[in-house]
Amino acid sequence: MPPSFFWSEGPNIELVQGKYDLWLVLLSLGVSCIASNQALRLAALAREAVTPQLRLGAIASGGLSLGTGIWAMHFIGMLAYTPHASIQYDLRQTVISLLPGLAASFVALMLLAKSRLRNIELILGGAIVGIGIAAMHYSGMSAMRMHATMQYAPGHFVLSLAVGMALAMLALWIRFGLAGSRRKLTLHGKILATLVMGAAIAGMHYTAMLALRVQEMPGAEPEESPTENQLLLALLIALVSLIVGGLIAQTNAHLHYRRRWQIEDMNAAHLRALVQMAADGIISIDTQGKVLDYNPAAEHILGWAPAEVIGKNVGMLLPEALSGQLAEYLQKHEQAQNRGAEPLSNRISEVLGQHKNGSLVPLRVALSQADARGQRMYVGILTDLGPQKRIERQLRIATTVFEHSFEGVVVLDANRRVVAINPAYERMSGLSLKTARNKEFSAFYFDASDEMEAGTGFPEVWSEIGRSGHWKGSWTLLHSGRSHQLSLTAVRDEQQRLHHYIGICYEDIQQLQPAIPS
Image (cartoon, rainbow, N blue to C red; front, side, top):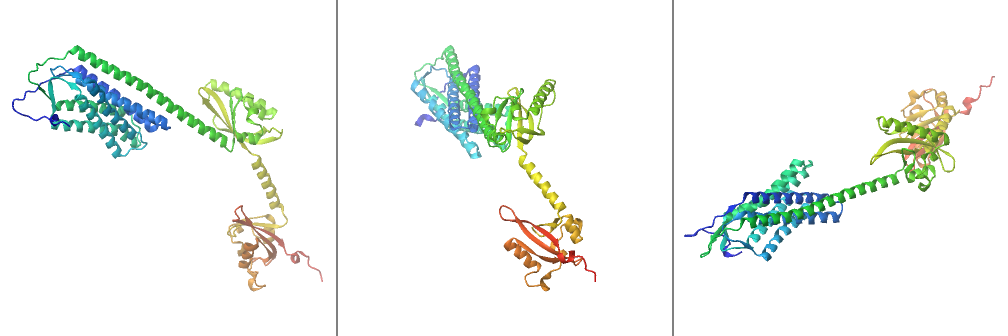
């Protein structure tokens, strides 16, 4: 930094007073707000990018927008200022002055592109933007060539840095800090962030201009710069800035489109994966009954391959009688829809499907209506009821056997409490299900361990079942004194965990023999 950078008062120093063109000042503020809006939007887009390429494109576009906006604002602001001296600009230094703003903008946007922003990162981002604005301003001022010396008041110099950094931090906090508080930023909030960031750029510039002290060189006559040239150059810079902004806006729109397309493509891929991996069959048809989609689970249930079904009428998957009914149903439903009826939603029914081998498959079908880009379609979710029907049939058989068996049957839970008894056991024991349920099974019998051979008491019985899974012997009922031949078996699940016990009871043969008359 040259020794003469800061100004100090001295005797006989006469300063040159300048003036501002209000319209050019407003134009510079408008350019800074447009650039800020583009940069903040692209920073937000970079945070939401789903691919590294999209994120990098948003950062590059946003950095270019903010950097050129800072540069354009500065030179329009300079052209708005007339110091009553002829001014020229060093082309090389002018181009170099663009670099600090661009570099600071790129670094700040890379920082802001993180999915989560901490307060320290918002502060750092604002500081970088503020310093970039200041570096661009003062390097741009050094490109001015006129018959006068330029120095800066230290107090206003520091103030210009503080204004640029503080307003930039505030703008970033409004745009990203509030968005991180789980509240959706409103349009008014986005506009406010844009205006504050634009004010940060313009505020730093015009505060720095307050620090400017221009002292006329001895022997030089002040002359006013041509106003028409200033206005023409300002409009040219604004036009170039707007063209760059327009190109960036096009890039912004393209990036938005790419982001939305990638999200839609990702959602479609997720949906395809869910459909392909679903355990239930999924079939979609159009309003004429033509099959649009057919997943692997549907192929497993009905035997038809997708290539054999897609594009064909769904009636081929139904018995002939039901095929006609479905076509009639779709026709009536379409007519009702045209009259404004409620959409079809999760209508569940049980039907018979036609397997490729000719057999009939019991199905539960949940039918719903969907709209795909204005085209109505129907989606059916098919559940194969065959296994369930077989289980129900087996349960009915087991229930019949349980209810009509001549032998007594008792079911115990893992804690040896009575769950169910059949009528034969009620007859043998004289106990009702209401009396016996949830009672300890051994509570109905004598413990024979003191009267019979060792190892035949209740604890030994359960231990034997635990070892071998089975026990058979004779127990005597407490309330009647009748003896039962009892077979107990442990039932375990697939992981060999005890599930319940099954007891089969036989009446003692001696008790069944009729008494012989003397």
